Length: 159
Image 1: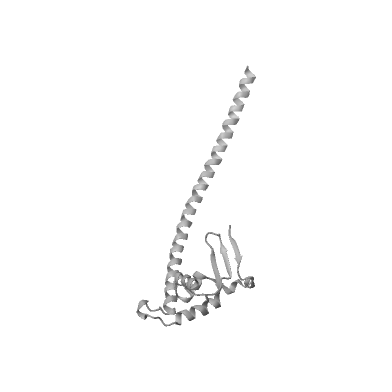
Image 2: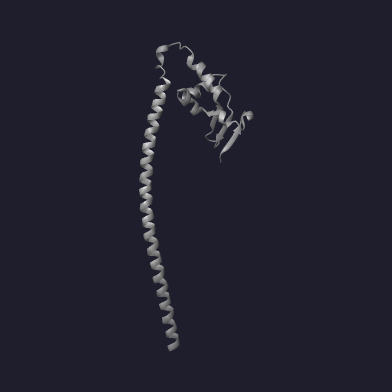
């Protein structure tokens, strides 16, 4: 069963202002684990507003603007050891990678849909054949039953 828990009821009806942590990570160009680490390590990380999904795997939502503000601060901090992390990729590169990824997804899913359409067409043809054979078998059964009744009736009348 899918549960919904409002932790910040002032956002009920304002769901368009919320974002999942995973979507927030994609939006600011960091990994989901980076956002998870921020949430664990920083007391000023935006408070959760909403939890959805089954109890075993909750989806966490925060206020989009609060997350963007927090991320901007985190991403603009100077690192103690600048060589320890690879440089951040520019947003345009991230968006270009997204376009490439989703283009591949669309191509793959289009091919999948086309294969399923062919499979469905084949199944529909087999279904039509099976229905025709069923009608023929029912007609033959009806004729056989009628002949058996007629034969039984003639045997009774001759005895």
